[in-house]
Structure formats: C-alpha cells, structure tokens
Image 1 (cartoon, rainbow, N blue to C red):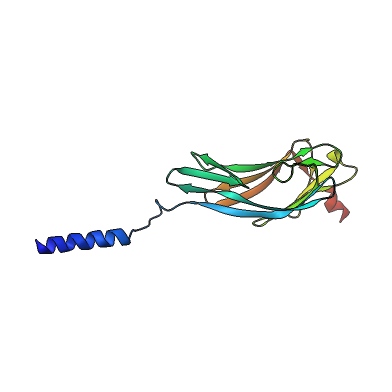
Image 2 (image 1 turned 90 degrees about the vertical axis):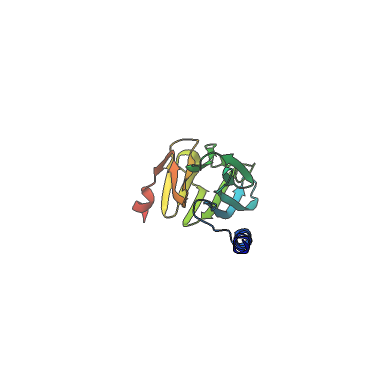
Length: 170
C-alpha cells in the first residue's frame, strides 16, 4: 500500500511539473513585420510598421493585419492590400494612410514592394515587386499575400500587366 501511495504521489508531482508538449497541442502560425514608408499627396512621409500573421490556439485561429485582429474558424488563405487609383498619380491605400498616397515602399520577408508615380501611363502609377514592374489595367488593383500554415508564400499583383518596356529600355 505504501508503494502504491508513493507511486501515486510521484506521478502527481511529475504530472504537475512535467507536462509533455506535442505537435498537436502546440500553437501554430506565423507573424511577419511589414516595414517601410508612405508619402502622402501633401508630401508628408510616415513610417509603416505593421504585423501580418495568424496564430492558432485552443479556441481557433486569430488573423492579424496591423492593429486589427480577427477570429476565424480556419486560417486565411490570403491577405489583400487594396489600392484605389484616382487616375492622376495618386492612390488610396487605407492600410497605410487616410490621405491620398503618391508613393509607398514596404519590405516583408524576401519581398520589396513599391508603388510610385509615373507619367504617360494608365492611372499615372506603377508597381514594383522585387525586380518586376507592373502597369495597372484597373483602378482597383490589389496585392495578394498568399498564406499557409508555414507562412508567407507568394506576393501577387492583381489587376495589373507586367511592364516589359522597362526591360527594353535597359
């Protein structure tokens, strides 16, 4: 009987202080910092510093973009950065500024993304993702950040056309 009580006490003691962790109970997810600058129509320059990611816990998935956090039943497949072009070299990007934007440059993981003014092209702006430049074929393009449980996959420009004229000029 003493052996049984001693065994039970040891099991309780070690059970309280030595909790095993396995892959099924560990939190899953990722978080990336998006940094850069944004320039508004009035010439003011501001820093961009926001988190993008999601985390699983016992209640479900929490998706985070900047200061916003949203509960979801499943992890999101993508995050979309919406750009509204005015056709005169300005854009509205509510994730970065409440004022019209003339330029932004952001870095996230292995991607450098830049929106800048350009004359004599549709909508008066051009987009660059790493070494590829894009023209717009819509006033409402977006940048899609593809996500998975492992992290950031690809960054894709939507409602754009690949600008091959830059390659010919070089």
